[in-house]
Image (cartoon, rainbow, N blue to C red; front, side, top):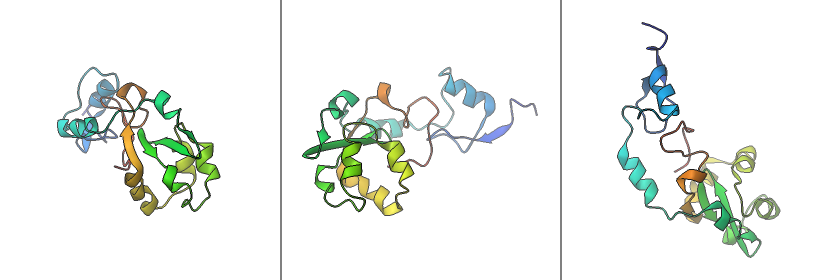
Length: 143
């Protein structure tokens, strides 16, 4: 077995558990689709309203607070008073992608699950960083 044919764990969301290094490299270059990708997953993503980063940027204050986490848009205006870490840290990231700040805070599984309550849409495909269809992407992202 050559180096190119070696089986590796696939970091591509929706892909088979193992793919060859060549398949992963070609998928990264968008030359081919990774075998086993699920087209139903793409359909579910399209059902969410698409909201651009420029639209999110208009909602950047205490009375109107939107953030982006993992390429999804959340209206957290009503959550500001309830946030255990205080509202300041949320308002500081209002109107933009707060994924890195969210990751650094070490949120619990319950906090991650509660994101669904505030989700209002997702970024357009050309603005996505974490959920990129047809590109390498992170695994284990919250739904």
